Length: 309
Length: 277
Image (tube, each protein chain N blue to C red):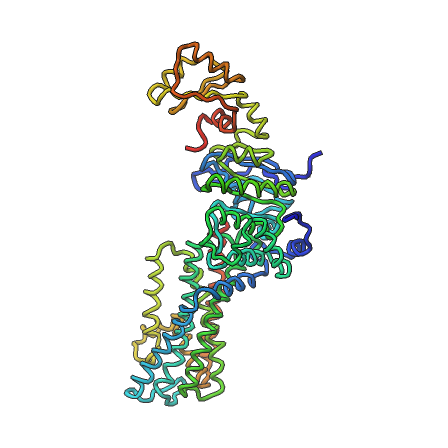
């Protein structure tokens, strides 16, 4: 039995004049699910997030959050949401802890609730010793964690995360993923946009791949890989001059050959044996690598383009 | 430890309030934020805005006053030049405080600090933000007006108990400018455009019968001046300061009430258009 849907979108469309940023997408998210929107920049992910938050009005289609239309019940819908926008918009005129308290007051929450809650969230975000610091003195990763802590002040049922780790170094990303994973374990519904494959694989139960405002595919990371890619991939580099010509000579090796400007990819269930076939054809790559398929390959298959340009 | 697993009575109660699409009756949270931010930052600006009209009063009233002698007040009675210009300078001070808060401060919060975007992602509506920010501008106007009235008293320019009413009247003036200022600022995209506000305010300050009676102008210039908000503020405070009331007093007050209503409509409409598109 599926838990009830907390978000339902039907034919959701958003146009800005001539440009259609979101082009008739439909999806449902169940309570407690971790749902991802994966796609390159400009795919319409952030616009979808803004419509869910009720701060951007849709052009057509239906949208329901916890049974309410965010367009007509904006403040009420947002009382159930926690929002982590793409760019931190912390209040730089306030100290770290004050940011949490003041944000909580925007939800009409009393100080008797907010004071202990702020301390609890600072602990969660590993920022307890920064409580009295100025916001501009924090590192990028700390600001991000504070933004996430802030978004939790109203105990949201749904957390919207727009590119949560973009611009962070690998260590800061892992700390953040760990925090988000804990939230997921506590039953918070996560809605996440990302153009990072590894992030989607780590955090999402289910995701939609979007490109140019449309849904290209939907499923769990593993099922998408099964459906649109092979188990393994061989990455070969022959030097930028020769990749294209050699790509043609490799036809027939593995299930499929994809030639990119900087490398040639061979999709095969057994990568090592595909690599042996390459050697048998007397082709000598400068470098070779056998790896598992990832969502990057799914995206490449669906759109013919890489995710991060 | 569970950070999130909801069910906390406070968060449930906060969700059961009644909300409108534009207003969630929580402008107080915006005011509280402003006070908390002011605590750490803007004292110097606050003080500088207070001193400007005081310096004018000393320079013109004390310096120029003896040369001018007495002038005819609103009821026709002779009053000292300092007593004549003091309420006008108070009106200017209320205007400046409100305009500063509702234009430059708002411009910064809107375009650089992205403060309002953050606020509107909570259960605040655009009307909560507009009312809260305007209230803060009024609070500053009230502070300036109280301080300036105290200076007037010390300089012996207050001769009637009616004069205490210049304080609430100044807040009314500040309200008119603040509600409009915020709406106008929402159209501004660059610092150059913000300079247009000063370009409009300086002549209004100098020519709104601030330092001399409006009767020095030919009739058509008088009409122009009388269409401007500051003139109504100057006349209103001048009448109150010596307790000389007339039907015109009601007209001045009505002018500001209309200005406030239009200003709030403009500001809320603009915030909605900018942030809830």
